[in-house]
Length: 478
Ligand code: SAH
Image (tube, rainbow, N blue to C red; front, side):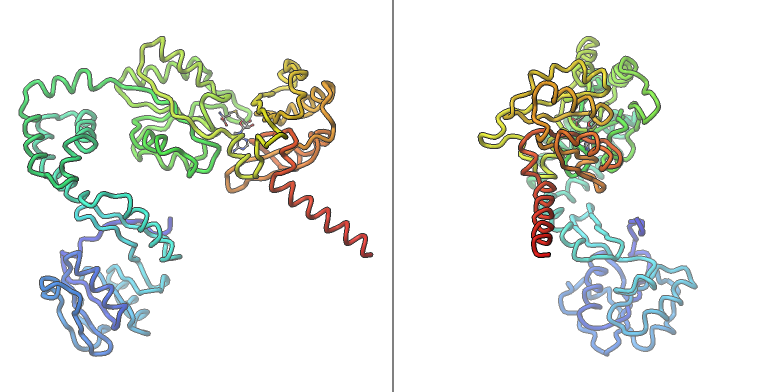
């Protein structure tokens, strides 16, 4: 993040605008819509105020002369758009006085930049790209525009009007926040959003007048819960909509080391974050201790999220946690995630099932050589079965030995997919015979092994075939 988003109150003084043409007029419009008093130095003498409302136009002061010698007392910001060489000089003047300045398309001379804006009255979303790409910012804005209800600003003002009154009725912060969440997410919020603010007002008045109301909130409504959330294999965009919502609602998040930090960034800012997983070379706090933490958090009235890589129910010990929560009589729910095997399959285009070629899929784990020895490999010899191995890097030689001894062909295609869906993902493709060597090629985990004929359809395998073909023809040509 290069620029910190803050919101500037432009009604506190005058904004000096220098420039002409469509560029200057675009800035004039956005400043005017924020209620700014604008002093406009046009560089071509044309002070066309077309497109502004009467109120807005009345707040524009048409200035003559050189903006470089303009009087700056009472000025809160300086904007330079379409004003040629004036920008750099105006910027030095502004910076000498500590005034925020924007020179259009000139990051070097700007101390602030204009974001793309979604304007819903009191609710404003600003989208920035650090000045790198206004086009990308506009695309993001379009998506947010589509997402936000038109009357969202009215909802914010509605809450704003009632805040003080509700603060007096519910002094405790946590309860009050939960109350407002219910108002906003529930029928009262829906009334405001559908344009029936009057009905919403009386509904809220009824509730806050009821004497039983605070008692009820303080007892039953304060019960906490635990949500097991699958964080997916790494790419934050692979979170489900439900997972994202749970992260945004959480009071506290207990997460594993495997969870990509970018995913935690999407959680509510003030949620507590507690790492409970194993780190490489260091033991974790243990499953019993984790269960205990989850139970205690819920009993303290918190909405706890247990966040794990992939899916909680695939080698994630989610089953044990659910059992402990059930025994402790704690409310819980489970939100699935995209497991690493599916993430890798999608990214590298390995169809886990394929017409007559692959009719079954087995997910198995072989963490240590001793685990691999416990696997009954004779059940895994069906050539129409794809095998997905979790935690199989160290035990790769034993996986190879077990499958070969059981009779699977040494030529069976194998893929090692490391850090799937992350920015540093890597793949190595070869045969079962070559398996331990493939592990070296991806340089570090976490990695998943996929074993079976379908690996030959994967994107890296197709590339490899192309390269082999090319070198064959090259040899032939020589
Ligand atoms: N619950 C998780 C699995 C946890 S076990 C899930 O559903 O994905 C940890 C193992 O998952 C790792 O040893 C590795 O085999 C695999 N894994 C997790 N994230 C991965 C990723 N981004 N790429 C490849 N393998 C991954």
